[in-house]
Length: 130
Image (cartoon, rainbow, N blue to C red; front, side, top):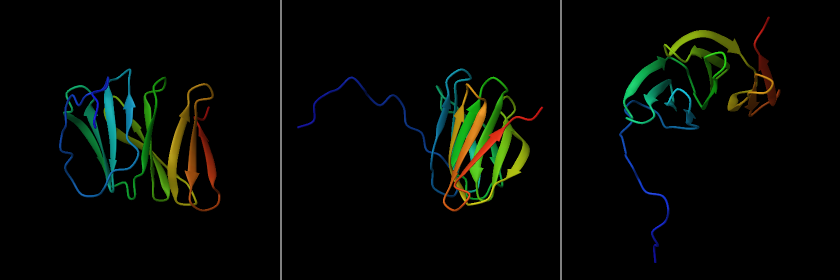
């Protein structure tokens, strides 16, 4: 027997394009939803679920994290971390990472990005230079 709970579906939206999805991320301050898809990342307005931008050509995308203080996003993909500007949803850098990057996390206290890979080196730490 299914009992009604405190949660309900508010909206559903079809996400177009090739590839599956992996780790999605919401930026609560900017009200954006970031969805990695096989070879590109799609950014949506988190409330309306309308597309606000894409970053194409990132092979093997797995996850997205956001550094809200610096306005940067990071996408884990095959062999690299793609850095993008969250305001424009445009790529600004690519950081080569060994070991087949997959899981990714951002620590706001240290402003570090932690990348977990399937092969050694298993953990890579990225910090803003300067």
